[in-house]
Image (tube, rainbow, N blue to C red; front, side, top):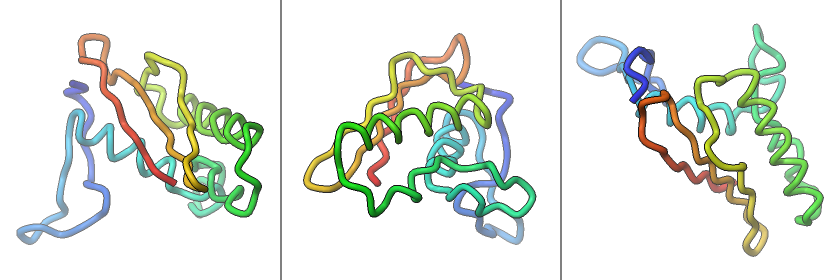
Length: 120
């Protein structure tokens, strides 16, 4: 359940006069979604952070595109979220022009296997 993982909730917001907090598996899921949704170069102090998906918006939806997106996201996960241990290969599928990334992971060795689907 990744008990040590704590931080600001994503999206950032103020609740009850303070910054909303998230922890555990909710925080891990938010971090995964944030990493995939962030454009590479968007963060001023960490230019390499991001999933890289947005640079392929105009590319043809093909097997090569899905393989490239899968590799870029896996690289970003290893570099920026090593605590999200993949338990199965990352799956990138397409349906009528929409890509879906499925991440099957475990946040802690004692945690259950979790699955996150992000539609791009």
